[in-house]
Length: 268
Picture (cartoon, rainbow, N blue to C red):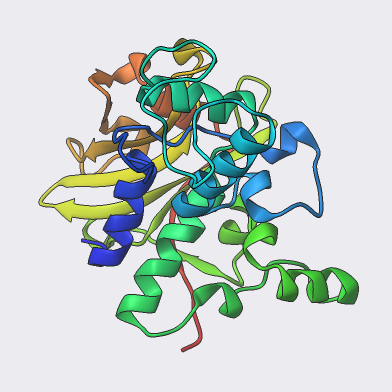
């Protein structure tokens, strides 16, 4: 398994730490669609669970949304409606104010906790986020590493190496999908959290089309190795009770121009 602190980060994305109202799952947010640059990482889909909660409090108080009091605690009821505040209210508030986590931001925050606990270093300082020849961009990436790490960063052979056999897969490895989607225009990444026998457990931040505007977000799933001599697409992908073509993560894997499992190559 991943380290306890890494698992706690995943838990906190699945249950954002809003005081008094458990069960609010972090929604998916993709900064590429907003075209925002130079913002705080929490505003570009790269924040920690705690940063998402704190920013929600600031926005709520600033715009008098009525979900939090002046101390930043969740109100017992919405000041505008008089109805009790629920996890769904919080999720809608986050989505309406463009707060959430995107796929590579999720992986980065979980792996930061994992490597700090198991290796004693911050791995984001050890990977190449931009081409070496681009000095200015490298300086920006050094100053703001989390904001400049994306799926292509993880896929870069300078930063990761292919895992070629199912028996070699370990927690912390990455399922990478390049040029995926109906028009093959975006990249996606899953984080392998555990391997139990022939079952690979993963976590990710994603948005399925069937979930509409308000139900997407961080989720867990499994890939069972039912055909060990065949490709990843020939295995049994399960997520939220869906498998096969009913599992939109599997569909995205099928649509990818490149689908592979990679392991970070870190100089310790």
